[in-house]
Image 1 (cartoon, rainbow, N blue to C red):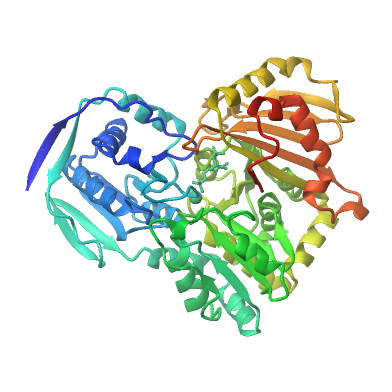
Image 2 (cartoon, rainbow, N blue to C red; image 1 turned 60 degrees about the horizontal axis):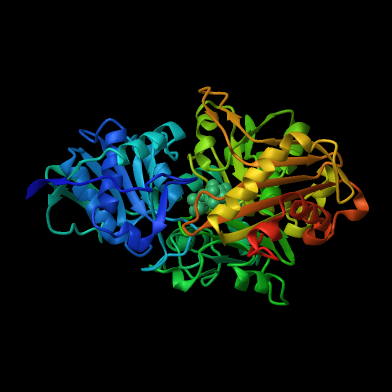
Length: 543
Ligand code: VG1
Ligand code: CO
């Protein structure tokens, strides 16, 4: 086996976004593309020499090939060991757990998460630090800087390693440990949740459908929900990870998980429905005739946390990304705990979790998690709901009604305009930015603007500052609009418009969100000239 020094030149555009580097698969498969980025990760983090890493991915097209390249490069860079999931599979939360449990120097996750996969779809690579969380901006900035200066990378020539069975092997002196991707994660879930109570719930006839969307959570959900908790076989559907996710978008929302939604609003609906995304860190929760908005789900979990053994002593604090609805703030206030507001992306929660300032955190984009790992965790959120349902003995709809009656309801929706012309999208944001100082006091659609700014975050733990994190418009009536450009898309620009309205009138808590938010949506269009500037009459995706 030989180690090769390969001469290369910088490739433009390798700037990690909200969650790692995501590109069209053919871009990632270009000569040197993956190699340059992986070498940049090693270079930016003090080299791989003597280090131990975790490696795994969501099983999308090119996952298996990329794993072999990364293993050969880690060996050629002098790494001591790589712990890799069987068949190079690991859900993102399971990878985070392994990094922490095995005290490694970090990990590389191959995923483009909720983006579709396949030869012409998306691929991605993300580096997680030794705390198990996505590398913070300081590191991703260094990785990007390295991609602009790279002149060579190191790789071993060798046969492909057999990753199909757990066990130990070596490559160029580096140990490779192939592990069952589910086992450690399963153990952790048993420590957090009351499995006995959930088992009793299923034994009493409670029914569930979990849609793994042909993505990585299939094996996890099968083992835990069906195998360990006794949900009837067949409760987990689309459970075999496929390289193109069955041709669909592995994005658990009412649009892409439509068949689950249809079932849950039909006469055959089980008691509980849930879905997860490509890499297993997102969750969708839906009761019989009751879709739970992710922002509401986060608030409900916070309010009920002490019912779960892992959180029985209460929460140290909570955190949400800025565009996430402020339903969580109301719970935090009632409990007298801190509620932090961070920029979009899980990397901003890491410091708060590490410092013990927050226990639970989440995002409006179907991401919920806690200090058990340093990623959001889809199946964990599903188990959390099941644990709460088992203890409270109520339906999802009843729990939501109780919650709104107690805390008020934050009607919430996100309107996405996808693959918009990049100049048009940036032009729209820039025009808003320029008008910000003149907006307070103005009336739009019968609502008076109270404040308007561009969100910047000062990390209370390490003092770092992140600017340009979304434009927010606050109305005197308590409504809010946030405008942001996506940092995970791979085509043109995606404009996200987040709409929120607070309702405390007991008679108005059961409205349809789009209905309740129609005035706010009209105000968003009038303020940002969305139709005019993007040429779109309606959003592509409404969640
Ligand atoms: C989106 C979501 C964000 C999430 C990120 C990664 O980012 O809005 O909340 O953290 O995806 O999720 P953006 O920049 O496109 O809005 V995952 O499950 O795709 O890793
Ligand atoms: Co994901």
